[in-house]
Image (tube, rainbow, N blue to C red; front, side):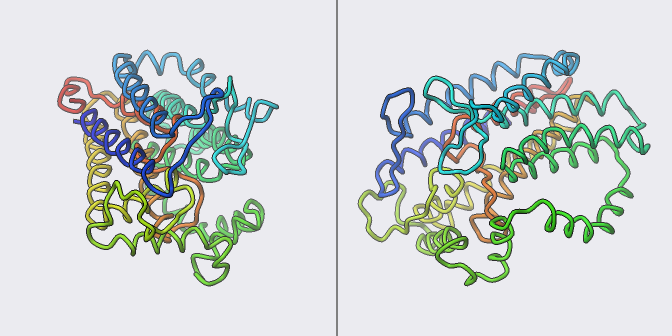
Length: 363
């Protein structure tokens, strides 16, 4: 069922991106010196992603965790290359989080997410019940801090948040005592103050302040979310039609094919379309969550990590579009255009399995 839902999500995402070709928000890109519609390239990414899902699904989780150091290197080394002359910014972003190879770009942190889920599951499994002890827990926190710090210093704070959420879900899925969560709640004001004072840059603070005062910077920091809200309102209940070429009443939203694709869905398919997309994504997440209690410990932890990956992406992306969360550059799974995220998320779904119930969870 997880694989089937993934295919449906990919198909719906491809249709959405293709429809952008017939609107004022049509996007063309140059890849490898060839000018092409983004929709064609996105379709290729989806095919590659589904192939990756099938290929990864044939590999035993135990074999992946046994080679955790190789898996970790596959994730970390390309990410480190973004700090060299090979690192570039892409898609209008100011983050140097992409590698440019042969005229194409890809985002190594997307691969790093999948590799981190595998290595973190191996680390937790090796510790067993000792994860509640301070020293082993500190080791796990340092493990999670490595990818988090790497992507943070790339300038990609959104992905850094994703890594923290994946780590938290996997730890509590492994049986970490909730007293640690209580401690985190108690010291959360200190953590928030430290993050605000020492980690956030001025433009990042502005994105948070705009949430509290929508009129703070209507033509600057708050412009994109204001346009997004107008687009959603413009769509109404049923929307203006997915292939609404030349409709001058469409509200322009920057990055409609990427992080703000949900606003485009709302404008063209209305509230009904948005609800359908959320039902699809949350159904996939819940199916994966159901699978996370039916296999070996390593398999369950990997499934919990994949659940956290997809659920956090969906929640944060829709929160950005709806204006409840700051804009931090998190794509909507399977719907936002982009090859790195599409292929890695499909591969992540391929990791979901159970021992003795694999067919039920992955059909």
